[in-house]
Length: 365
Image 1 (spheres, rainbow, N blue to C red):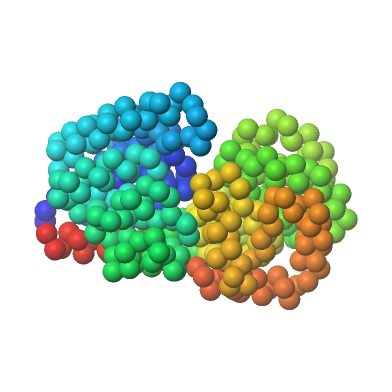
Image 2: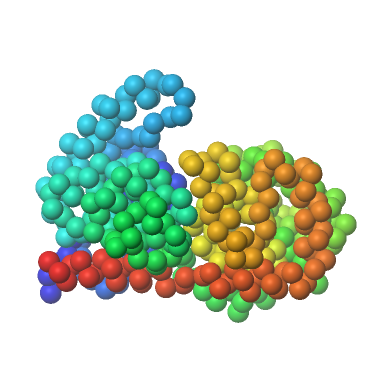
């Protein structure tokens, strides 16, 4: 059997990195002798996360343009030329069979050079509103694996395959883990559990909201598992004095915390949305307004349009959160309806489908 070589590029956020790692893991399970190389952006989180997953990574000197005038913006042309030249060296030396991009700045120059070299490229787009890098790369890509319908206005229709986003496989059957989960987090099985997620770094506005509404949760006999993020942990850990609140900077056992939860409050990054579809719990999405093209709101709206979740914008939190939460916690039928509907949107075989498309390109060579 031929020893295949794969380059994967995606980074800047966990939403780009973890899908790339999941795709690499599935490829490795099918082709144990294959060689893998990741390409990321220097000083970004992929430079730590990818080696932790067991893969080699090379960093490019690349960053995105800032929305305001900064010194870094003046360096952008230099960084781009440097990254294109380094990508050419990487492609020439490694000689990959396929190059896979999952988004982020580094994937732009790398996939562009791969196309020029005649190497098949695959894009995996996590969001319902694609970033500029993937929109530009899509014109020459062989395949575009998407997680949402109706992206024809951004990508060539004949290249698109609806696959979904790769998710952790330990989330597939969380219902069987509920009893273990309640014990792990020392929760009262007679009380409802609210899970609050703001991402690994945390979400300032969500943290402010939860701190303000502690008495509301207590009044409804709700216990809270609150991932406030490592940037905010010291600010909020004192609130654990309240019997119904657990505060974590980061949660490792995501399968167990989802199994324990009855209702979830979450940001709406693409990976989080895909995981919550698999998990199938009632969700209140609070999208970050500080992301490119407001794509978190669009991700959440795609679920809300199918009656699968509730969406509250940050500007609505002070006036509406209390009413929305009280209505949901009291209405078991609405909780079940949201749970059933969001589960219908899950794509648990996403990683397998994406790798199937990559394998088809290899077979054609």
